[in-house]
Length: 87
Image (tube, helix red, strand yellow):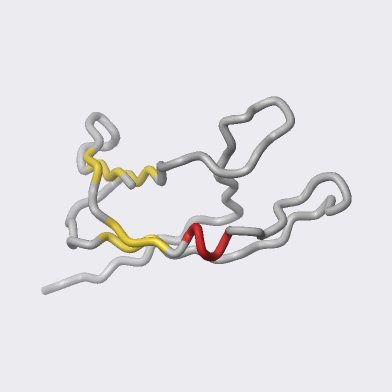
C-alpha cells in the first residue's frame, strides 16, 4: 500500500496488514459459468498511523487471470476509508 500527502506528487510505501488473500482466495469474480460477480470485504490497515493523507494506492502481487492479461488484477466494487481523529 502507498499513501500520498501531497495530492499524488510523491508516493510512500507504508507498512500495513491485510486479510485480502484469505478473504479473496477461491472467491468467484464473475465470468464464464459465473457471470455475476459477488462481493467480499477485505480490510487493509496501516500499521503505523499517518496524518494528512490525500491519496491511497492499493498495490501488490497480482492475482487472478483475465483472458488477455496473465498479470492478474484487483477488482474493487467500493472503497471505503475510515479515519480516526485525535484532538
